[in-house]
Image (cartoon, rainbow, N blue to C red; front, side, top):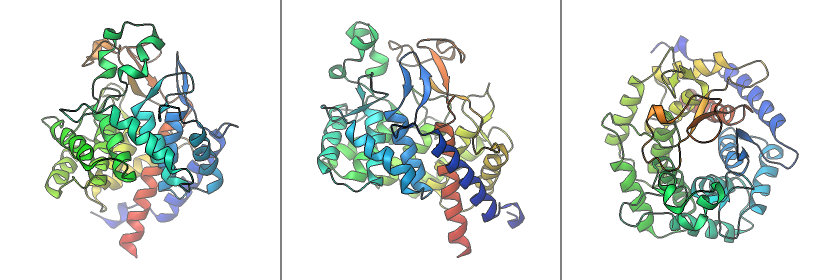
Length: 353
């Protein structure tokens, strides 16, 4: 690989500064970030947890991350969980990202982590080890006005939720090791034939693969041979000049590219041609205000559908379930891009230092 192709540290510094300023400006007065506008409203708990974790990669100022993380602590539910937002029942994915966000604050309330861990373990399927977004006690069927047996798609184990929950449980160490091993075994078994992961809530391979390899690393279950195969398979799926596609019909997106970068760096923490091309794609696609273009990256299948087919998920702009939702507030994708570029900058500094 030609060293001339590698972005300068000054270019990365500038992009990260612009991205952080953009995200700081997008934080609401209550300290939370919001994105993905649906009939249930915009997400706040879940989005804020994800953003806090991404900004921790970039060593964001405490004035930006601190108020959000502190506010998350106050929003924990009695059941130990967090939710899509304040109106929706608790769920395991929002809880996992909120719990991970607590690593960015002084653990002045360790009971919050213990209660969150118990909530996550409650969602683990005891045989497979997979972890569901919702279980029967969450009452998502009542919230959407459906029969209890009409939400099987949302209450089955999900790859992306198993991964985020495994990461949170492994990082905080608040559960029995058998819980971690069961979830890790389920993740390893759930890879597709091409060696990558697919997800219920996300189109494409970038997001589920990124969180899966990070989770296996956190649980110390990501052996070099497996990670090498994942790295090579992901590299082969680049969907454009340096970019990755969440949906082939949409084309390369900043969000999918950022998550693919995170996966590549989790598999092999070294500078490669694919990683450099992806970083350049993010640098080139950043707007002057520090944001990145939005894309329909979040999928909401009908609750009764177990394996969503393309015809069961309508194009962006439809209302309800069976839709693809964009990060219209330019928060979620921007946070992913900032986190990925920050990790890449660290790789470059380590290489040169």
